[in-house]
Figure 1 (tube, rainbow, N blue to C red):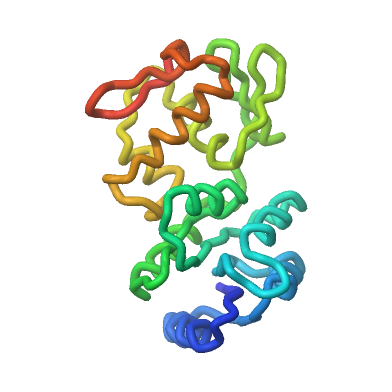
Figure 2: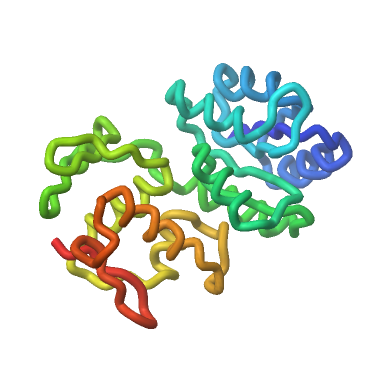
Length: 221
């Protein structure tokens, strides 16, 4: 497995590189956003560890631009920021996971392993619930024939709910499926995304997504 580290703190990058190489990963390091973006797009890596605060181009912009060009390799974002809004910005840019500095190296390694276990591609299929249609091949969701403008994480949450329609999903299940280890069980990140989805579905009531108090959520299909 080949990993790219994009981190301007060369000491930290070297520390991560050494630890990964001890686990038999092949590792390259670059120290600014523009170089990292070029390497990620053309370097044939299996995953990217991407810092948010970078010279030349910040990590959120790098991640967003890579996703717009259909570069779908796993990305873990690193940042010294710990506020919920900053995490949401990183994940909405297309990052698969998010780790706040300072972090334990074993946790970073666990997250990398989790991302690398994911299937490379989704099986093309159509999911239908009420008036909502998900076309996984086109990565597109429509409601009554109109395309919904969703972020990558909103898409992931709604797809998971619809795939398990009429089943009650706990917050922990949604966290584990859509974010791996990015947030703990006491985070309200799931509630934030459900609120955003309800707004985009033009339904602030529970017509589509029902709250199961003390448990989680259910898409009513």
